[in-house]
Length: 455
Image 1 (cartoon, rainbow, N blue to C red):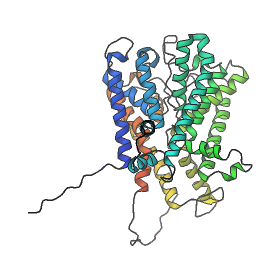
Image 2 (image 1 turned 90 degrees about the horizontal axis):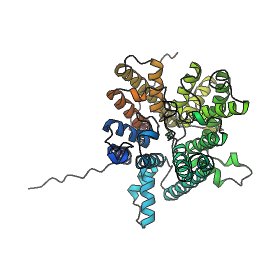
Image 3 (image 1 turned 180 degrees about the vertical axis):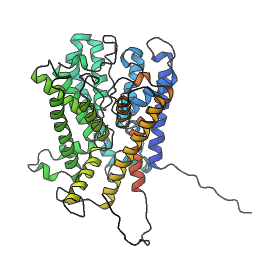
Image 4 (image 1 turned 30 degrees about the vertical axis):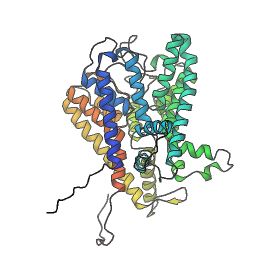
């Protein structure tokens, strides 16, 4: 009698990444729920603990409990570790441990890392991760030292050093968490009491931009730093990332400067207005810090902030959103159509149809997910203003962390919806792109061409 042999089904890289993030979130939530993590020494509501862990791992920054006042130093340190794991990816930490103990990194692990960082191929993936870790810790250490010059005179040496490192990690990973608490204003204040401190605002904004550009872009810039023809030597990916990022930051800054001149920026010096308008343009790119009151912003400014949150940062970075490259491809495709061209063209290159289809699909799926979440949240949070609900959903999907103040008042189901949205915003777009990339169409079948009326 022949005994059937069942093949052991192994997880593919996409599943490993998705399950890995979920496992880190669950572990972090369990630790945060324990009395050892809270300031009061009591158990923390498990749903709030999971929500905080999800927000940290998904580098979002939305919180139902004030980070600075609810958690003790152990709890805050756990959150910082979760932010670092979420920003860099748990595979980076796994690789770091393997390199330290001299363990050989398997092909399977290399494949997961390739998927996690959107690398073109396996060649040089370990070198890329080494660079990523060196670059990350170097930038974070430098920024922490800058922060310390501002925090130590106010908070003392020990606390000043802790605040320096903690906020450096949070800003670089685009997390948006802060430890300044709500004991002064009675609400989550972020950097609003420090908006005249240019060193803190500029350093935080610079960390957000650096973390949101993508590690591969910085590697290209570094490798070609001495070339007299730097722009020509950059890849198409790097050019698009830098172009779209520059347009969004500069355009957003000028827009906020005009719209908020007599609102949240009124009473400031011209230099502080420029700094805070620039920061208001940078931080919606999945960071979550705010230096001016969000509820006091002009309605048009809040709407523009939602658009920036939806776009987010760049692929292979610590940021979320649909990504700058997706947005760029959609824009260039529209431009090419208006010019009567059959292909999407940019920088003297022609994009493949598959790349364009993937970008449009990610864009459409992002919009569909946001609309669905808005409808669901409007049902569970009946009575809350629609603008606040929309703002919350855009912030969660883009893993930003900005809020108009309804996060702590969300119902249990509302917390679950926002938590799932944060997870999908961090893992979902990557999963969707990988799933689309792995679709194989039978080459032998080609249907007849026909036409549809459009417009």
